[in-house]
Length: 326
Image (cartoon, rainbow, N blue to C red; front, top):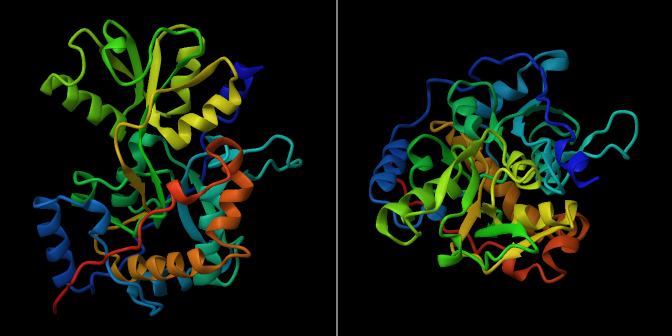
């Protein structure tokens, strides 16, 4: 049954491409500031713009889409349990559900006045940045970690979730965590993920046993769980928040050891979409303040069963914003 759960909904949504919604008339000062921050990056989660509810060129272009095309186009996951997944028990349509999906609908409601005014596009892990840069989506909301490499290519909102990398392995495995027990073990990660880049850097620096095999990468993170179930790898490294959901899908696996990094999820957008970044940051401020239908309510519904009722450890810190001129 666990294998069946892991294999559900791996087919991507076949939806038409969209042209770049942004206008060439955006200020260059904030972009240059962000690029400089990326080159001298120490706290990538702080490299974002201050909140604003004003409409700019990017938002106006979204609002000016005609008829059925007047939707927010968002890259999401459709097979991450409790984050962005198709629940086969939700009805004939098997609509997307989860913590990330709640946030997407909140953004659509604020910008377009309708939480259902969304065109979801299933985006593999390694296609998140290309989808943004190519203009296929307005934004990506897909458990995407803010890091120094990525802020050179895309703009991020303020953080909306805190997590860290953890090891997932069978309960019977001698693997104890991110330590020497990984020597000689085969680890699976998603291509283009922070998990892979962390393992690669740690192996190079000698912080991961030289005999650890990190060559197995897959397009979507859930594929790693399938590889683990089939015995093709010995462990999975991914965000602890995702790993907890996978352990809930398959009771034969469990998290091993503590998180060994601190990371933050953000909404990713085009580099020059300053007005959209500011608007999303304002939405996040309001979303966290909304105790009835906001961040906490979404956490309670989707994540408390796997991450625990205390949401404090998953709450990002109070946001800090770039100071810009011009």
